Image (cartoon, rainbow, N blue to C red; front, side, top):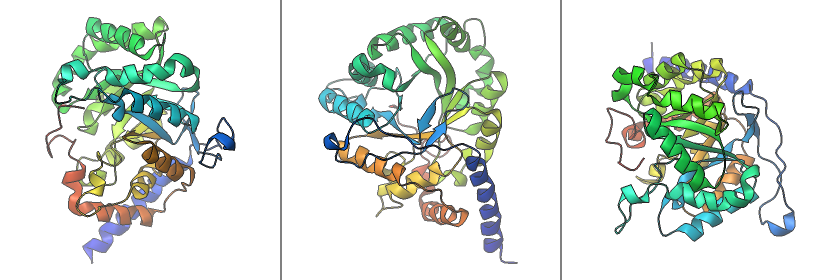
Length: 344
């Protein structure tokens, strides 16, 4: 038997099943606000999917609050990006208390909060136009509530739509009980929800699926933000180990690290942005987030999302094969492959 053909056929069958899970999600047209006169892009539609059981229908492409948005000294460009994203129909924005990129003159400890502050300049007048998500990197009750208070101030709002435990790590599995203790982060999240400071609760992770699954088994979180791209299957895959269970629970699933911080464009071009986005949007995710440097990048990504049609299993397999020789480079954020950079 030709094992390569057998493995390809087996993978193709698996991908067909995964695509079937995606088809279970309803998709509706999204009509943008505004008129063609003030926007160069065609104002047609972006496919919508339910964000789990939150009741929010989210566009399949959303805005991540990193790159330019988290960089000190780029406030003007950041505000322009956020406004343009909303103008073009993006209705979900993701940020975090920890987002802030160091510069030659500003250490990361001082830069943290830059993303929230820049987004907050827009939220001051456009808060009701987006589903707003942020995160706590603190694991304690008191520390997380302090971060939430600062996040609300930075974002110029009285509530978050989604508050998440930031960047669950493999090394934390042995301490997971601490998350649920009376002085732990989950108790802080429950209190914040009860008091109306946040509407929904979630978790995020890059390193491995197991700790994400452990958290979902312990608490009915509403959403999960996970790192998934076309090289996922080659090392501790979220697609196999996390997505089916998360779909069964009916939670919102947000994909990140789709272009692997632009590493897909390196080494002569592993895959292009359309292939990277289409691959993940074909999976049973609610939306994907990508950090941006320039408005043309935003506009191109929106075009891709608007023109999106689900890939076939064979098309997905072909993209995976392109990524295979470079999978370590594209999965640098997973524990055991590379060293995750200090700036999440």
